Amino acid sequence: MTGGALIVGASHAGVQLAVSLRDYGYDEAITLVGAEPRPPYQRPPLSKAFLAGTADVASLELRTPAFYAERRIDVLSAERVTRLHLSPAEARGSGTALTDRGRTLAFDRLALTVGARPRRLDLPGADLDGVCYLRVVDDAARIRAHLAPARDVVVIGGGFIGLETAAVVRSEGKNVTVVEAAERLIARSVAPMISRFYQLAHTRRGTDVRHSAEVAEIHGAHGRVTGVRLTDGTLLPADLVVVGVGVVPRTELAEQLGLLCDGGVVVDEFARTSEPSVVAAGDCTVMPNPLTGEGRVRLESTPNAAGQARVAAATLAGKPQPYTDVPWFWSDQYDLKLQIAGVTNGYDQLVVRGDPDRERFSVLYYRRGDLLAINAVNSAPDYLAVRKALASGTPLPVDQAATSDVPLKELLMRASAPH
Amino acid sequence: MAKIIFVAPDGSRRTIDAAVGDSVMATAVKNGVPGVVGECGGNLSCATCHVYVDEDFLTRVGPPGDLEDDMLDLGVADRRATSRLSCQIKVAEALDGLIVECPEEQP
Image (cartoon, each protein chain N blue to C red):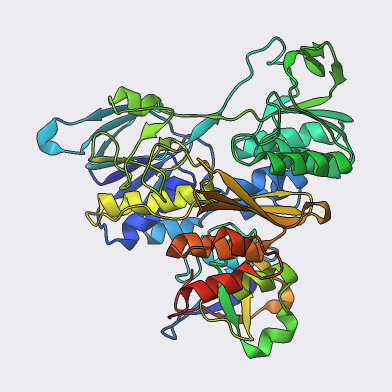
């Protein structure tokens, strides 16, 4: 291979970057290289339908082989880039990559879409058989294999991955305990009242949810997990432990190149790294808040991976456009669909619509009267209305939004109607 | 396998042999059919897989569910009586030959 674009990391961001490069008219070779042993696939179902056994590996495929061939996207699977080298300044952006198969790939354009790895537990017993993480399809398959004969399952971490997993596992009739170190669930992403709602919702469905609970060690016998001991001495029996305690962005390659990293590869609104000829997108990056341009946020979601990848492709194709997508996210737990739009950072006021006790409500986040975000539980119309309002910059005043009997859609239409 | 025919806004047609059990959205995205985005992967969260179902297939495809109805109401540019989110239509032998039209724009 000579020249062309090299995209390192073949998941949601990498695939979208390759496709968008072609959409923007990039005509050189495109190589998408990924360490996993199979072509790129969808990750969100891994903690949902795939874990529940209602979706198989084939159905997760992101694009068909024929599609890649037709768009001239060369997909290299089971090959990890271990070293990157950028040419001197006069050949800006070009360089070579060395892979673990001993191959050297030359490129004129470089994109990093390397993602993140699950944060590992550093505790006695963490290596026992039956202690699982969830990031790639093989992880999910391993959990499924352990799940069938299991009776007691402990989920360490009460974030989205942990709670989605707990919901699937509980639905299969297992005894489930969720252990969260913080004083509430999903603390990094949602307001305390949403945390409380999920604590109650999981408890109502028979899961033992423990917050402010720290794991001391994992017990085992004959190399297999048998239980989880908490620092207060409680011993929770377990045939399967699923750990979901966050992710660590893969910044090693970026660091090798001397790119600025700060809890992720730092990129600007054009997905450019501190070496502007190199772009990065997806879970490995931190970027300015796309709605305000402020600060640095990491948005771990497939919509962000795809949106940022499109921006990165535009930059590489010489047609730069800033990233201003309204961040959004969803989480399915049991029959509860949580939909999130916006970024909640810095909120000072909440507006609750609907009724949490009936498991159908939404929470709007405001800062100094400006709408920032929404968390909607089984309330798609509110979610969509807020997403639209954020995208168009239409204000939804607090006092009006607080009137639950007027649909947000109507407020939105009134606000955007010509005067 | 069942054949699904995607009609682009300009009237051009593309026929795809779809796997039974896949959604119409997944079939379109995997094969790179322009006009169907499917950003959320089929979770009723984005409404970027909006299609118009050919009249002859309407009864076989059926009406949208409640959540889908909400998404169509607010999420798509030009809702018609034949509007569906293609992530909610599962490919089945009974739908062999299904014709869906892609809208001018997805949100």
